[in-house]
Image (cartoon, rainbow, N blue to C red):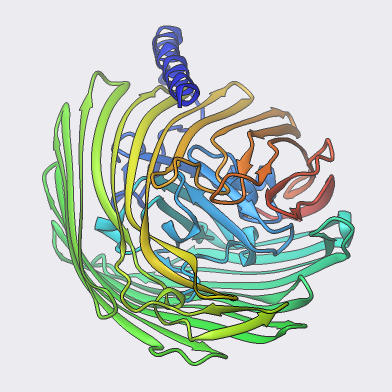
Length: 620
């Protein structure tokens, strides 16, 4: 414990020492400066466009330029090592992946795609590994609870992926093709435009690879993914807007002793009308699907889940102030090879948020009530206070609550028993479960300048009624696994993020310290690294660009008893780009340059050194 306290104090002192240094070192703003804006507009944190400092939240934006420079083969590649974010995988290329935000597991990290929630209702988490990064142009990561805006599961934070937006004029075509290590190949193409108030964007991509072993001395495990995107909208002269989108990914991934066919899909239509000059109303009808059909030596299984949502949001502006009022209805449906006691459930919610600006003081308050037929009523809220110390520095403090809903597996997993070597193992759900609840506190300060920014935050989250699939022995030679509300956790941490656009240089840095403690045992929660560092450096050299990322994480434990220790690791990724003709460019990426063998889940190894070369035509 003393070591942890010293580490926390050391990180806080390091961050605080950087504050006066950064403030003193900044030159006066130049009105002719052409640096990229490092205080971008984001919408996930507040449901309304706000600059990063105005959100009073810890936010990270990964823009289109970042995604194209790094040219990842998986969306999780860009999340690893970001402030407060950790990633665990059971191998590379389409293998099970989890995104952990501020020490909460994958079930507490909510994934949205263009405002539509995507997850599995049976497992409770998102299947990040099946999403093709070529289908998205930016990502927003909001750290901290957002249950008062998004309802269940936004305990650790929210990740929102945004698909390609239409470009002005048009049509604008683009094509990309490439290949690399492990017989990986990719072909992507798209078309977009914006004329006469009508915007459209279409894209398709196919990625396939022979893959790598996911266990030592194992065989290569392949993966293929075909994705398509369509967006269409029209804005009328009176400001009303109507549109729709559809994103679908379909493919196959080879796993231990078998393979899985998958479908990930979101689709929706919306209409937004200006009721008055200060009131806009928007109705969205959407559906998301997570379908996974596995074939293994031990038998076949199907887990298909669907969520349909009607979301009504009203935005009212009163000078510098803004009020958001809304209601939401969702229905989950489950189809599996096993028979669940319940295979559907409804959730009805109402929510309100006030964004108030009394410069230099700003106040944000939100409240949401969820009524779920499976686990009852939940009330969540968030309160944030900001104070502008001057034009460049903003101090913020916030407190918020959130909850994680029990999954269909938690509640209704059918009675199942198997006997191995004389011992009978029993699995069954528990319909008496309560939702996990959490309370979080955060204190942060942000420095924002034209060429750079820095952001320091300290936080604590207390989680009650953690749902744990604990085991007991009701009789000799019988082991029963059944979820119960038994555990409590306290997660403390600190994050330091910084970025700069200095001439032809683009610099990003993230440092995370985490103390994820199981309060029942005093052990670290499993699969969480407690220290993480990420550095991204890129430089433009005329028609060339060069860059690299260094990601370092310390050890983690794979089990609750902290007996299975996974070693820390450092990864070096390099990249280069060449604009060799008008509208033409080539990119080369080499990931894990040092060929490091590393694990984030016991006995599952990730890919070694991997090179990928691609050629692009058009603007994307």
